[in-house]
Image (cartoon, rainbow, N blue to C red; front, side, top):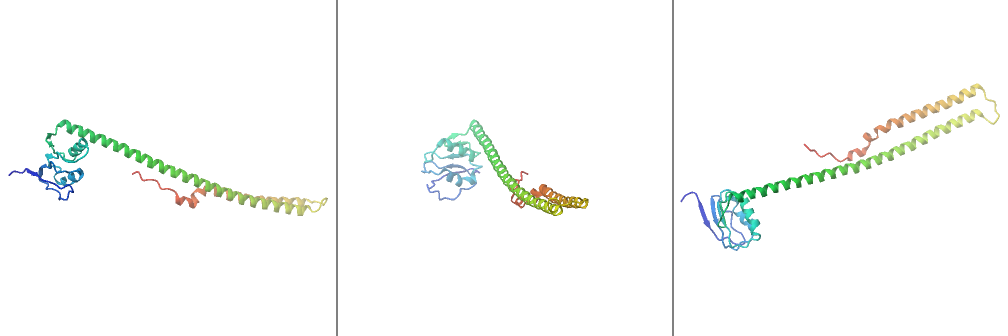
Length: 222
């Protein structure tokens, strides 16, 4: 009678039984040749919050000290374990172990996040260096094209002026001088247009570069 359920059973070492009833509050598994503690805990998990007495003496579990703390953690209502009373001091010690574990987990998580952030920023740094290098190559290419155009303008100016000068000793009129100046100024104006185009392209290189599409995305910290 009563609401307390008491059970003494013989569980197979293979652990083929189903989970026990949630109403179980006392379980005696003494001398069952059990070796798989996680399996036993799994089979008793339905009664984990109500179990107050658990007997696991004379089985084949390894690391009895560690197992004791695992059982106390898994069965928070235990007041008797293997015939020994569970004291407040033991619960306090277990709580301290749990808090220490939590702190270690916090540090581990922080270290992982730090490492991920460093790796992400390193990837961004490497990408930025590559992007700047590609931009530098584009600027060099543009400058080379500009230089070729300006050299062509200069050669045309020299050719036009040479045609005006004629042969050595030829008579040069004021009209010839004006014409030469006009030719030179026309070429200089064209060169200025080319320089302006080059100058306007420089600040827009980064925003117009197709490589921007491959930039690593920022991790959303929100």
